Image (cartoon, rainbow, N blue to C red; front, side, top):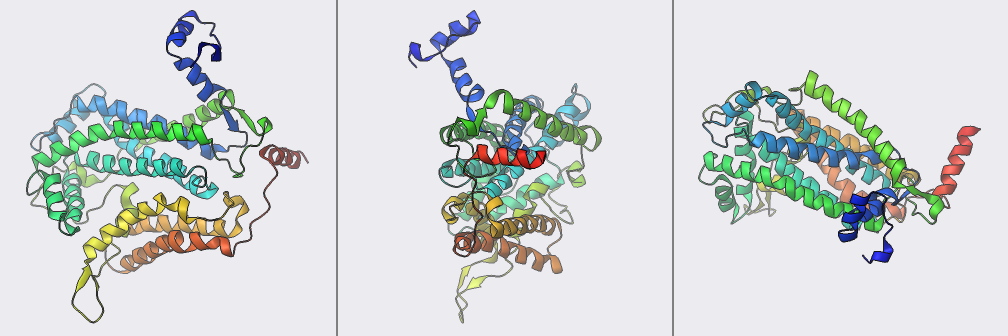
Length: 426
């Protein structure tokens, strides 16, 4: 940046640094005077909340790693030692364990807000796809972190999930052996998962950085889905949205603290307070709540797919479930290219709004199905909910614009805001 393009700072220390490395000028441009649509609602807080949760998870994770022993003979006891003997170790552990759930809550709300308001559409396709990559990395990190306490659910969850890769033709068994570091879930597995669980949050941080850069290049979407046309449509990010983000973050942290201090084990499974025992299988193996919809999709395929009138199996049931589970995330990744409606926000798409809320209920139903044993009516409920999930993304979304009559869009963000204010005043 040329010297003439920057505005001098009054603080001599900041000015001295900025002359040589204009980081304060960059921060001023991107986070102080950055023009932002003036009609954000509180759902836009969850991007900032997710970033704060990532920082909290990294900070507490580093402190916990200083005390944890990634060894099958000592892992469970080292976690108990953190809880009982390390100063405020119980607090660090509860913040980290419940923080994973809070992180997923923030990201899931952030994602569904994007689905509702069309934040995945041009010119924000790459921004959305980076967000899906972040979600995938979060899932991998959370799964590996759940294994580390080396309780019953940790051990058997690792066994079940890693075994899924054996369904991949030709290379599946090799992948499983590499993940395990041997021929069963044991000490090498725990070491691998600990190393990756420590590394991946920094990879997430790097992708989040790219996500934010992409956001500042194309600008934020807004509840109307109308692009800003003039300065009247925007306000500076500070103080308007810094204040709003701090308020939203405060409410969220109170919610977070309620779990940490009053119900720290509510979102966990009691079997994980039993040391891992390869000889005793839990009655019902379930993942953490934020994986339950994907777990239901994984279990939805209960039959092999064969060539009709032959015994030739094209896709085994196990591999079919794996394909659908990853396909559920793939559907989100390619969504910008599936939705052809020129209107972004569901506020102006009456039919899409209905289908969005049906999708929300479908995902909640998948969560309930994933939490239940794979027997009785829940098998069919999970299969029906899985079918609807893929119908929504690959049938309804690509074709809805052909029959949907959208509502007229406002001329500008400013005009819509003024009209809303006038309506409230009357």
